[in-house]
Image (cartoon, rainbow, N blue to C red; front, side):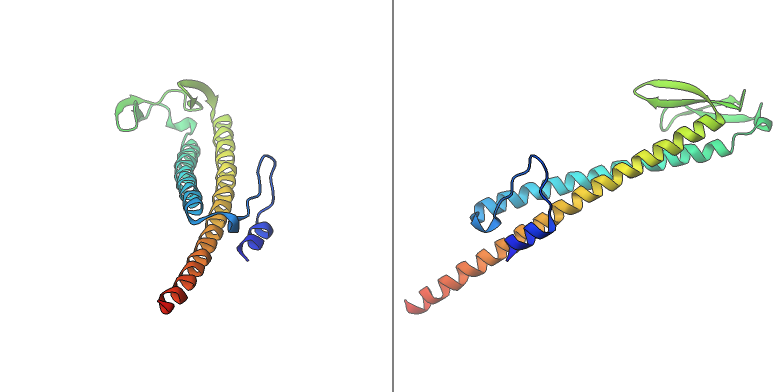
Length: 167
Protein backbone atom coordinates (compact mmCIF):
# COMPACT_ATOMS: atom_id res chain seq x y z
CA UNK A 1 0.00 0.00 0.00
CA UNK A 2 2.67 2.54 0.98
CA UNK A 3 4.83 1.65 -2.00
CA UNK A 4 1.91 2.50 -4.28
CA UNK A 5 1.49 5.88 -2.58
CA UNK A 6 5.19 6.60 -3.04
CA UNK A 7 5.01 5.98 -6.76
CA UNK A 8 1.92 8.12 -7.25
CA UNK A 9 2.93 11.18 -5.20
CA UNK A 10 6.53 11.51 -6.28
CA UNK A 11 7.76 11.87 -9.81
CA UNK A 12 11.10 10.26 -10.65
CA UNK A 13 13.89 12.73 -11.24
CA UNK A 14 17.17 12.25 -13.06
CA UNK A 15 19.84 10.72 -10.87
CA UNK A 16 17.26 9.39 -8.42
CA UNK A 17 16.58 5.74 -7.86
CA UNK A 18 13.20 4.33 -6.83
CA UNK A 19 13.25 2.27 -3.65
CA UNK A 20 10.50 -0.11 -2.60
CA UNK A 21 10.09 0.87 1.04
CA UNK A 22 8.35 -2.41 1.88
CA UNK A 23 11.54 -4.33 1.11
CA UNK A 24 13.61 -2.39 3.66
CA UNK A 25 13.90 -3.67 7.23
CA UNK A 26 13.03 -1.53 10.26
CA UNK A 27 16.66 -0.52 10.86
CA UNK A 28 17.05 0.71 7.27
CA UNK A 29 13.71 2.52 7.43
CA UNK A 30 14.75 4.20 10.69
CA UNK A 31 18.04 5.34 9.20
CA UNK A 32 16.27 6.60 6.08
CA UNK A 33 13.71 8.48 8.22
CA UNK A 34 16.48 10.03 10.35
CA UNK A 35 18.20 11.25 7.18
CA UNK A 36 14.94 12.75 5.96
CA UNK A 37 14.41 14.45 9.34
CA UNK A 38 17.87 16.02 9.05
CA UNK A 39 17.13 17.17 5.50
CA UNK A 40 13.77 18.65 6.52
CA UNK A 41 15.39 20.54 9.39
CA UNK A 42 18.03 21.91 6.99
CA UNK A 43 15.34 23.11 4.58
CA UNK A 44 13.38 24.75 7.41
CA UNK A 45 16.52 26.60 8.53
CA UNK A 46 17.19 27.64 4.93
CA UNK A 47 13.68 29.05 4.64
CA UNK A 48 14.19 31.05 7.84
CA UNK A 49 17.47 32.46 6.48
CA UNK A 50 15.82 33.34 3.19
CA UNK A 51 12.91 35.03 5.00
CA UNK A 52 15.43 37.09 6.96
CA UNK A 53 17.21 38.13 3.74
CA UNK A 54 13.88 38.91 2.08
CA UNK A 55 12.89 41.17 4.99
CA UNK A 56 16.22 43.01 4.85
CA UNK A 57 15.91 43.64 1.11
CA UNK A 58 12.30 44.81 1.53
CA UNK A 59 13.30 47.20 4.32
CA UNK A 60 16.17 48.55 2.23
CA UNK A 61 13.85 49.10 -0.72
CA UNK A 62 11.32 50.86 1.49
CA UNK A 63 14.02 53.14 2.90
CA UNK A 64 14.71 54.37 -0.64
CA UNK A 65 11.21 55.88 -0.68
CA UNK A 66 12.24 58.18 2.16
CA UNK A 67 15.16 59.60 0.19
CA UNK A 68 14.26 62.91 -1.45
CA UNK A 69 16.21 65.94 -2.68
CA UNK A 70 14.87 68.10 0.15
CA UNK A 71 16.52 65.75 2.70
CA UNK A 72 19.98 67.13 1.83
CA UNK A 73 21.82 68.50 4.85
CA UNK A 74 19.69 66.64 7.41
CA UNK A 75 21.29 64.77 10.28
CA UNK A 76 21.28 60.98 9.98
CA UNK A 77 22.73 57.93 11.70
CA UNK A 78 25.12 56.01 9.46
CA UNK A 79 25.32 52.26 10.15
CA UNK A 80 28.86 50.94 10.55
CA UNK A 81 27.75 47.47 11.66
CA UNK A 82 24.41 45.88 12.43
CA UNK A 83 24.41 47.49 15.87
CA UNK A 84 26.78 50.48 15.65
CA UNK A 85 25.79 53.83 14.15
CA UNK A 86 27.63 57.15 13.91
CA UNK A 87 26.08 60.59 13.36
CA UNK A 88 26.38 62.09 9.89
CA UNK A 89 24.91 64.63 7.50
CA UNK A 90 23.08 63.61 4.35
CA UNK A 91 24.84 64.79 1.19
CA UNK A 92 23.56 64.01 -2.33
CA UNK A 93 20.36 62.19 -1.29
CA UNK A 94 19.72 61.24 -4.94
CA UNK A 95 22.66 58.81 -4.79
CA UNK A 96 23.12 55.88 -2.40
CA UNK A 97 25.78 53.27 -1.82
CA UNK A 98 24.39 49.74 -2.01
CA UNK A 99 26.05 46.71 -0.44
CA UNK A 100 25.98 44.09 -3.22
CA UNK A 101 27.64 41.40 -1.11
CA UNK A 102 31.05 40.05 -0.17
CA UNK A 103 32.39 43.48 0.72
CA UNK A 104 31.49 45.18 -2.57
CA UNK A 105 29.56 48.44 -2.68
CA UNK A 106 28.08 50.18 -5.70
CA UNK A 107 26.88 53.77 -6.00
CA UNK A 108 23.40 53.91 -7.50
CA UNK A 109 20.72 56.51 -7.98
CA UNK A 110 17.49 56.03 -6.03
CA UNK A 111 15.58 54.48 -8.94
CA UNK A 112 18.34 51.95 -9.68
CA UNK A 113 18.62 51.10 -5.97
CA UNK A 114 14.84 50.50 -5.70
CA UNK A 115 15.02 48.29 -8.80
CA UNK A 116 17.97 46.36 -7.33
CA UNK A 117 16.12 45.67 -4.07
CA UNK A 118 12.94 44.65 -5.93
CA UNK A 119 14.96 42.17 -8.03
CA UNK A 120 16.61 40.78 -4.90
CA UNK A 121 13.25 40.34 -3.14
CA UNK A 122 11.90 38.53 -6.21
CA UNK A 123 15.00 36.30 -6.41
CA UNK A 124 14.86 35.38 -2.72
CA UNK A 125 11.10 34.74 -2.91
CA UNK A 126 11.57 32.36 -5.85
CA UNK A 127 14.29 30.51 -3.95
CA UNK A 128 12.05 30.26 -0.90
CA UNK A 129 9.33 28.69 -3.03
CA UNK A 130 11.79 26.14 -4.44
CA UNK A 131 13.11 25.24 -1.00
CA UNK A 132 9.55 24.91 0.34
CA UNK A 133 8.65 22.55 -2.52
CA UNK A 134 11.68 20.37 -1.85
CA UNK A 135 10.99 20.38 1.88
CA UNK A 136 7.36 19.37 1.39
CA UNK A 137 8.42 16.51 -0.93
CA UNK A 138 10.87 15.33 1.74
CA UNK A 139 8.07 15.51 4.33
CA UNK A 140 5.80 13.40 2.08
CA UNK A 141 8.54 10.80 1.74
CA UNK A 142 9.08 10.80 5.50
CA UNK A 143 5.35 10.26 6.05
CA UNK A 144 5.43 7.32 3.66
CA UNK A 145 8.42 5.84 5.47
CA UNK A 146 6.60 6.24 8.78
CA UNK A 147 3.52 4.50 7.34
CA UNK A 148 5.63 1.56 6.18
CA UNK A 149 7.41 1.41 9.54
CA UNK A 150 4.06 1.33 11.32
CA UNK A 151 2.78 -1.44 9.03
CA UNK A 152 5.93 -3.50 9.67
CA UNK A 153 5.66 -3.01 13.44
CA UNK A 154 2.00 -4.03 13.43
CA UNK A 155 2.87 -7.06 11.35
CA UNK A 156 5.60 -8.07 13.80
CA UNK A 157 3.33 -7.60 16.81
CA UNK A 158 0.54 -9.60 15.19
CA UNK A 159 3.01 -12.45 14.50
CA UNK A 160 4.29 -12.31 18.08
CA UNK A 161 0.80 -12.37 19.63
CA UNK A 162 -0.15 -15.90 18.36
CA UNK A 163 3.32 -17.16 19.35
CA UNK A 164 2.80 -15.95 22.93
CA UNK A 165 -0.73 -17.35 23.06
CA UNK A 166 0.46 -20.82 22.06
CA UNK A 167 3.24 -20.92 24.68
